[in-house]
Length: 243
Image (cartoon, rainbow, N blue to C red; front, side):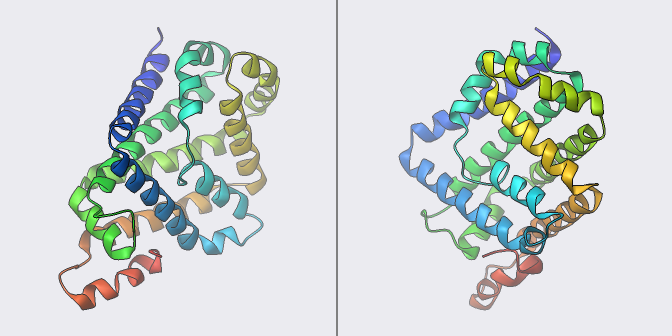
């Protein structure tokens, strides 16, 4: 098995471990779902200005729905595990590398979501509960890695839009991808490709995402929750990103 296939399968196994952990604890599963829904609301608030623009709106929605939302990817991931060797064999190297990065981001995000949710007192998530759970989880290096991987996925999609050969190959892969059980991956790649191509350059968008996500992370780690006054103003930290 190729290194690319092994890496993708390893990441998907990590995701499966997190799912099994939640399956054994309905309470944890409920808190993870609540956390993901809160994080999607947070992203929509953080990037409300970009979502409202014709240039950046589609890319912001792509991130919101594909990377930050509570969408259940269980079926997609199960398909991937079965067909990873075919994926590596059929798709160009640049696309396989993008999928590998996406798989690492997926695995890391699921792990962080499980751990953060385990520190929530209930499924009622607000700015204070989110900040307390974030701080209890810690893992500053993992949070930075998560942001870096998010940007890397965007940069990969942006690079692919400038490669006519890859784009043509991706279009030609529709039939074989469906036949191999890779239809969901094909949809993700084409949607991401078309979204980033329509943006005519993703540097400003990705720079904004990186800056705001890092500012939020720093503020969450530094936020004081020791007083009522500090808790009351949590919703205003980091550019008012917390709903």
